[in-house]
Length: 184
Ligand SMILES: [Zn+2]
Image 1 (cartoon, protein in one colour):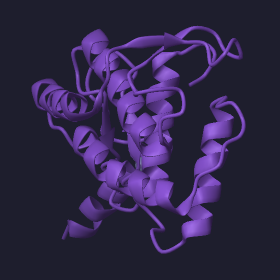
Image 2 (tube, helix red, strand yellow):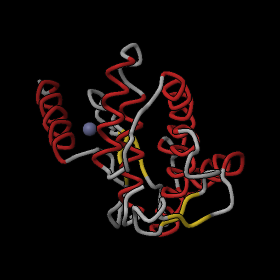
Image 3 (cartoon, rainbow, N blue to C red):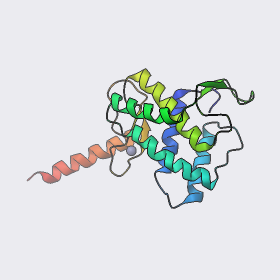
Image 4 (cartoon, helix red, strand yellow):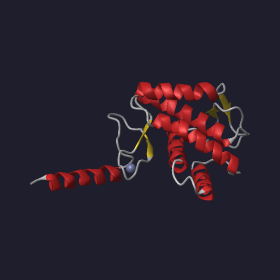
């Protein structure tokens, strides 16, 4: 967890890790390197090491977390987050990792909890706070068939369909071309 304990950052980290875990499943070293890069980029204190056992658990966790990103509305997302937390979360506790970070909330069992437990509980907590803040699903999967990346819903207003402006523009152009081709 970052020193700020910022919920948007934690949700973004969940989406970044999920994107890695859902692709390139045959490439263990590649996935582990990509995951440690994400964890370091989000300020995770060293040592950041992911074992083969951790990777197996993280892939399982990704399937559960993917259900939250696939939720169609706030109620559906809330039910899935509640189910995720019910089986796994411990009572909220504040930690500063021995004074190396700012105080922030964890719902895993201890600061030494395995990565999969930490990933699911910290992601579940961040997505729960986002949902309560926005009264909307906390994330989604990009509607572009060539992308499909998980993304975090942080803005106000209507739910997003695409992970980025680039994907939205590409799909608008593709639709426009398809319409033109369909004209007699
Ligand atoms: Zn996209």
